[in-house]
Amino acid sequence: MSVSISDVAARAGVSRATVSHVLSGNRPVSQRVQSLVREAMQDLGYVPSRTAQNLARGTTRTIGLLVPDIGNSFFADLAKGVEQASIERGFNVLLGNTGWTSEREIFYLETLKSRAIDGVVYAAGAPAPTSRLAELFAGVPVVAVDEELDGLALTTVVSDNRAGGALAARHLAGLGHQRAVVVGANLQLASSKHRVDGFVHTWGELVGRTPEVIEGPFEEEAGYLAASHLVPRIRIGEVTAVFALNDMVALGALRALREAGLQIPTACSVVGFDDIYAARHVTPGLTTVRQDAVGMGALAASALLGVLAPTNGETRSSRHILPVSLTLRGTTGPLLHPTPVDGGDNDGGH
Image 1: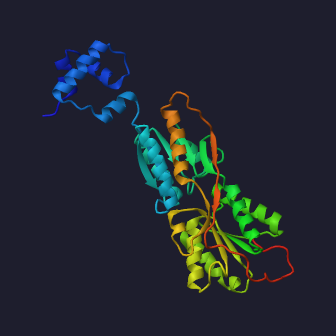
Image 2 (image 1 turned 180 degrees about the horizontal axis):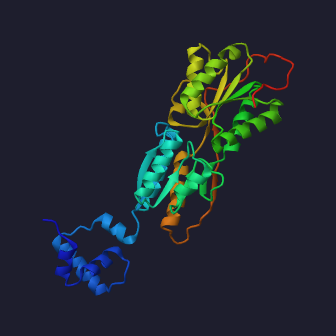
Image 3 (image 1 turned 30 degrees about the vertical axis):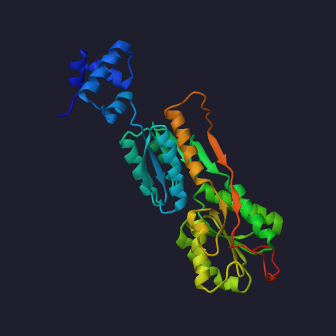
């Protein structure tokens, strides 16, 4: 037979309310009474309900985490960072995989809010309009991670995406490439736009051309389709380098080039973005801009928990930008054949 608060109160000779105050810590109780209650709990083998304690404190000790694609190891690593930082502070994490769709993001945000979670770490994949997000976020602490959301006063944790795009451009230009194409530009997302901006600006400064930009989702199939269409141009040297806006897009591009019988990097150099687990295990290994996904997730969770359960000496900032670096592997190499002359200054695109 289970032991109830009433049983503990009767053994300790106090009221049920007093036992609840001892468990929740919401009301002052003398040390003598606390000792009586805890001795009664021990004698009876009473185990307090975590749910009841949390409700008494006005918290569920649970946060939500929304990511666009848990199958992408970048987001798996980000989730690992969120979970590690949350568990250290005694919080649970509920994960939602939104599948790059606005409808699923709204569904999960509504579901999490209805469950009275304490806050949300939100990695947007297809964000709803600002007015709708403001409505969904009302009354719930939210930290945006990996993506910036215009028009909302949110704490944000992102990588330096512009610097990452510039690193990729500088590396390819330094190898002698003059004809690069940017693949997988999801211009709905700030991270993608900033990577494009960083690459295009630096490429223009170093090469004097405007690289072509091919739009598409942040998914492997987008890279595969884009690279498949580029194959004829790569064969004649009209395109010699590809900057893929994430590693999944880069892996799709590499698959298409291999199927076409093209040697990497002899025929075409490829640079990705993220440095996911698979990037170091493909052959050749993928040169890519590295983000600290675990660190980003941990920082986002810490920023949220700093609002929910602040600790002494904790500093807060509304915007965190993490540095990126370039990881060199086998998919990039020097230009081995001259670029054809067409008399124009631009590669096309936008």
